[in-house]
Image 1 (cartoon, rainbow, N blue to C red):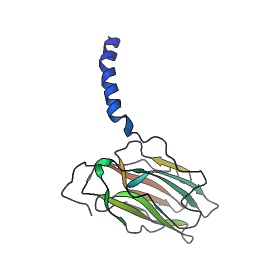
Image 2 (image 1 turned 120 degrees about the vertical axis):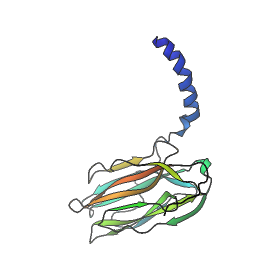
Image 3 (image 1 turned 90 degrees about the vertical axis):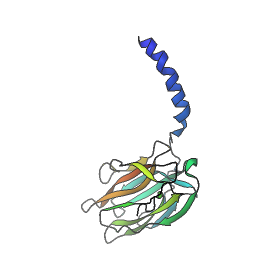
Image 4 (image 1 turned 180 degrees about the vertical axis):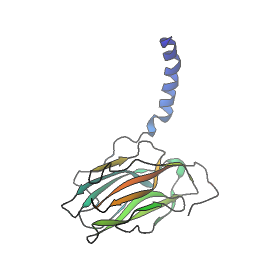
Length: 199
């Protein structure tokens, strides 16, 4: 009986792997370990190349460096079915020392980050760089688990499948640890134009 099931399902698995196997992102190339988007206690601006979106985020915390983090990002081209970005913009600033929730407006996808460090708060303010692809709309959205798992830990978040995109994040801020935990808003995008947009 097991041999019969194997003979029936093995061809199906092979066909499915052939169709969808290349949608796995795999390991990301952040560049050399010393290549961070910022230095401690300094502002930075990171933007993916045109037509690419953020797919991985790495961060290291240092209490002795003002409870700040080093940040690094990896980008990948968006799926060809989305086409080229029709417009890109910077979202509103999310203030330091507060909890916040933000999604790219106008159905945009996160393609960069901008941040400024504030020593009086021992925290950063954040802005998302968002890009819109034609009139594609998000669906099947969810929040990731918390990154890092605990305040003060290193963080390494990556997208594992090709058709899932970061659209925003919600963060909590610990006044005791002077650190943030992130939950990223991840969505799939339609392959057709849709008649509505979010705000």
